Amino acid sequence: MKHRTWSGKGIGAVPLILALVVVLAGAFLLYRHWKSGPGTGGTATVPAAGPSRLTTAPPFSLPDTNGNIYSSARLAGKPAVINFFATWCLPCREEIPGFVEVYNRRRSQGFELIGISLDTDTRANLPGFLLNNKIEYRILFGDLTTTRAYGGVSTLPTTFFVGRDGEIKYVHVGYMDKDAFDEEVRKLL
Image (cartoon, rainbow, N blue to C red; front, side, top):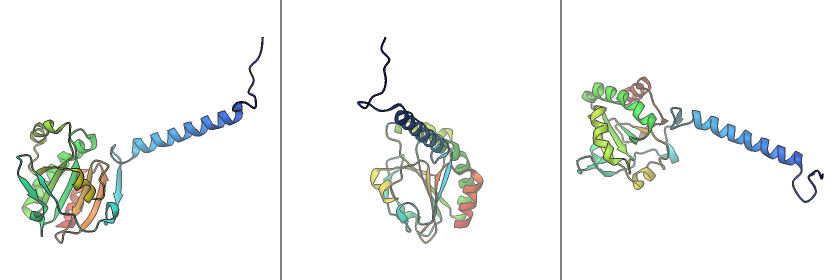
């Protein structure tokens, strides 16, 4: 009976084991980052300049849920929050009740909250989602042009806090709890 041995024609046992250990370690690190990273309940804070070093909130004109075009020019002189979300995004769904509560408490102070839905295949779910979550703030249908203008929004939710001067004061990527959201909104007022 012949024993198979690793020869010079193939990979040696030691290098193969080392390569396997490196791959498994890399997979473990990716998994840990994925479990705690933005978009999965974890959070990330982005400097006030925001993604791609934005300082001024880019203008947009997007359709609302009734098909009317809403221009960001209507936000001029108002403290505003622009939240990119989707109905299929679990962290988005988890933070919205707190956003609704803060919006209802602060809107009499001139505060505006705009939700930009990035739903595509799930767009039909939006009316029921708005009703179930008692969302009274304006919801718009986002597009690629707008996400690119805002620095390439690639993680949901992503929330921009915009001062009365139109400058982005703070950006939050990932889930944001009600108290942290309210604290940032108060800074805008």
